[in-house]
Amino acid sequence: MSQIVTAILPLFGVVIGILLQSFIARKKFRSETALDARDTAYREYLEAVAKRDITALIISKTKITAIGSQELISLIARFQRTNEKLDNEKAISALLDVIQQMRRETLPGQAPADLDDIKAMLFKELYEE
Image 1: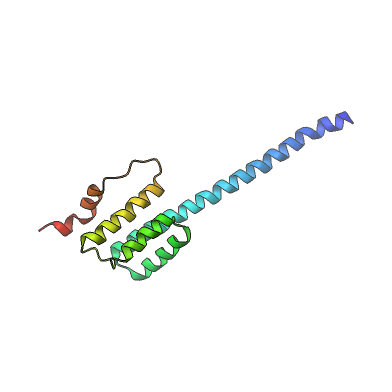
Image 2: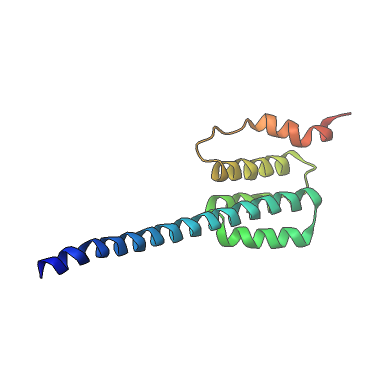
C-alpha cells in the first residue's frame, strides 16, 4: 500500500502543478488582453479627435465606456461638453486632462508629463502667427 501511495503522490503533485500553471496563465492572458483592448480604445479615441471623425469617435467612446476608468469617462464627458472643438482654452484644457489621465492609466509608475509641454507639442500651430 505504501508503495502505491509513494508512486501516486508525485503524480498528484505534477497534476496540481499543471492545473495551477494553467490557471495563472489564463488569468494573465485575460489581464493582458484587457489592457491591450483599453490601450487600443484610448489610441483610437485620440486619433478620432485629431481627425474629427465622428464615427470613429462614437466607436472609441463606446469602447472606453465599457473598459475605461470612471475618472477617464468623467474627463471625456467634460471634454464633450466643450463641443470637442479645440479652438478655445477650455476645450484644450479638458483634452489635456484626458490625455494626462490616459498616460496615468497606461504608463503606471511613470512621472506625469508636463501639461505645458504636451500643449506645446499638440497646439503650437494654433498659437503661431
